[in-house]
Length: 299
Image (tube, rainbow, N blue to C red; front, side, top):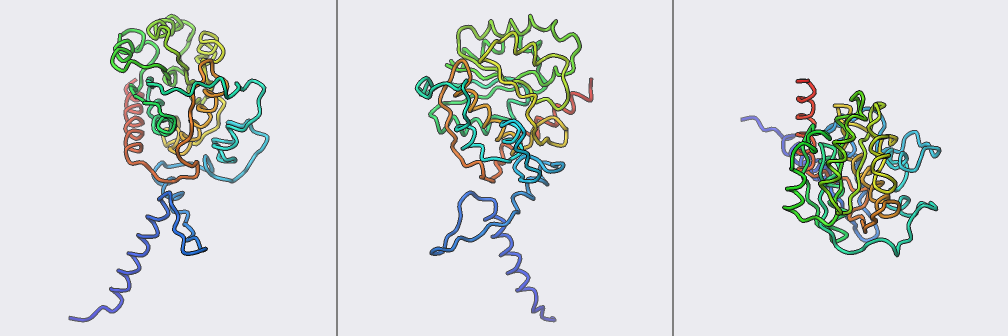
């Protein structure tokens, strides 16, 4: 047998590359005395490959535009979301003393966009002592939630003290959307006197009035307008990428604490620079995208 002197070297090289790859994806850093081992940008490449990102988007520092609204700059990754969102000066912000710091049982319901924000919102809830329960139905609409007692049964099951609704993305282009207002009223009636906020759909195209109807019906402090946020999308063109979803939740959490009618404490658990990809989150998001795409193709 002929010897292959380069084979052991190749094995060692592959092993080292694997170690460095894993190191690039974890949150901690390795320090040897005063020297910190620098990480590669492999995690960025992984995110681009995993989610088929198109162009420079959330989390990149390209084409910075400080003239954009605060929320848009967060989603584009132009600022440190965890620091600037909370410190952003606005006369409409509530005093921190008015923020409810008690522990809540939070129920997150809605369509697949609820799945998109779940894992980022869970980080906030865990850091703030809240329990978060997700019940999202892919491709669901106002009509679906209003015509059955699913929400009422979920309220009975989880006994939430706070509800977050993420619903409306599947009705962006419905004509005569005002005709669906009575379905919205039925959903609100099921909630009763439980404090709640509604997260508006993150438009990828102009809608036919769903955001206007939601905002005018729910009133100030209960509706978070997401339509103007600029965020990177998955291949389907609708759902936000993993990183964009995290920045989206940064703006939502800040709004809930400082501008909503029912402000509760939402502290951030992880650094916005963390690049670890949660396998369960990826699986849930991909599953939601596939189901939504299949549903659209059947229509």
